[in-house]
Length: 150
Image (cartoon, rainbow, N blue to C red):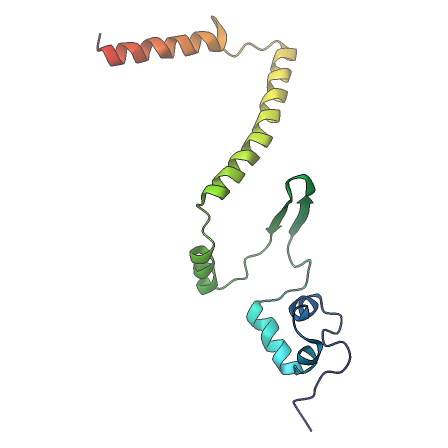
């Protein structure tokens, strides 16, 4: 019995991971992989079936020629892999800070506006005696006093 049976026809067998993997290989080379080799490749790359995440949100922003991916689910990576991921893909980068700032602004501004509208509609006055302008003026005066030392 030959354990090194060669693939014939479609080497990916309809597997999306393998189709992606074979995309840049010659068809002859793709057909030369054995079942055992393909299993080892998939294990090495950590290939999972699509839908293995609780949240799997992927969309493109054609106008900006960008894409967004948000994946959330149970943590299955080993501690070693998490360390390597942090080393090679750090969270604290300028582009991540800009992206998070944009998300906060996109979420915070509408929340603030809706909250302010509800507050105004209900006639609730959060700050007495002049509102926010009075608070800013008082902070300015306290700052001037602290700097001058009077």
